[in-house]
Length: 393
Ligand SMILES: Cc1cc2nc3c(=O)[nH]c(=O)nc-3n(C[C@H](O)[C@H](O)[C@H](O)COP(=O)(O)OP(=O)(O)OC[C@H]3O[C@@H](n4cnc5c(N)ncnc54)[C@H](O)[C@@H]3O)c2cc1C
Image (cartoon, rainbow, N blue to C red; front, top):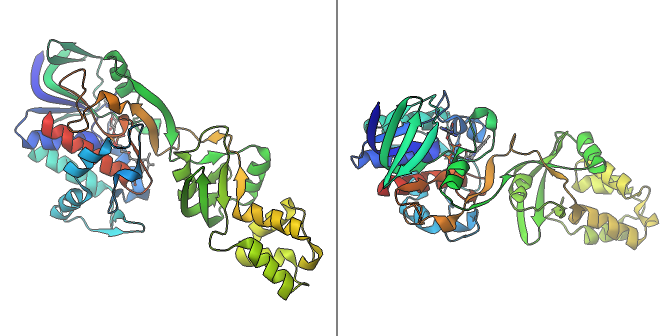
């Protein structure tokens, strides 16, 4: 059997469904294919089951790409407010958790149901559990082989996402297609991912497992002030996940465990005002007790503060305000929220998301070299790039 569609989309995740809806609304005959049994699994598990579906502060500065200007066009063609309007149209209740992050009040499943309903209304044909064996281009048409059947189309949209969380359907399919069509790929790496450490730091993390502190975590000039969590594998929490997207193997990250306080001044004031006070007790006033204890031990300090030289106190202050540590790696794609890198934006028109070399071939969502910060930006990129491709495919 050979069947013709106007638009075929591979990957029925956030970006793929959005592009299918927009293309379908334009009267295009659309086929949406996914190899997974359940549609929208990443949406379902996102935001702790409530899906942080966008951020009211969406702005190009919240995205990482070799070309930081690439996102501007798509984000302005379909904004966070456009997606919020869609959510409101479907009566999905939502709230701002913090920092402009919007979450469903009830469940991420509401977003999946909304997208599936919109697909149905736009007459999108959905094929689940479908394995594509081959994709080929003949003249200006794209041919897809699924067992003994062939489908062909004018516009082929690749929306197969990144490599993170392979157990729910992530695959390298999109990158393989890009290679087949001779498109450049920016090196891919796990991002928004917990960081791991060698024995000494790891032992400390294990001892402090479950403890969360507000911290400023920085790499070179980039910094994030959010929660940081000690785990039995290393460090996690929003500030660590954010910096993981920038950190380079071999380099240090810096952690300020008490960003609101100048510790040098605080300790010097204490030494003057209360010289007989115990250093462990003093540090415990600004840090959780367990952490204070470990930091004092690491610095070999104990006893009354008046017995400690200014040099020793400065070293102690430094390990609180500017703790430099060297991650040995990350937890990898198993737990990463996203994939850094992907299809080189040089290969794609930012206005249409279409390949510059291959008219009719589009790449959208996470498979492209665009990675958002934590906080709803990655879904906004999926909605915006999906919308744009759907308008032009
Ligand atoms: C645990 C977790 C929590 C997250 N939470 C948030 C959050 O709250 N907010 C936020 O903005 N972002 C979040 N993200 C990131 C966000 O989920 C992704 O950036 C987003 O889903 C990317 O959309 P996409 O459509 O490009 O890819 P995906 O949503 O990954 O969809 C890709 C689709 O392609 C299909 N596919 C893959 N290979 C093939 C193939 N060979 N053949 C057919 N189909 C294929 C997959 O089955 C999948 O359905 C989270 C990610 C994770 C892992």
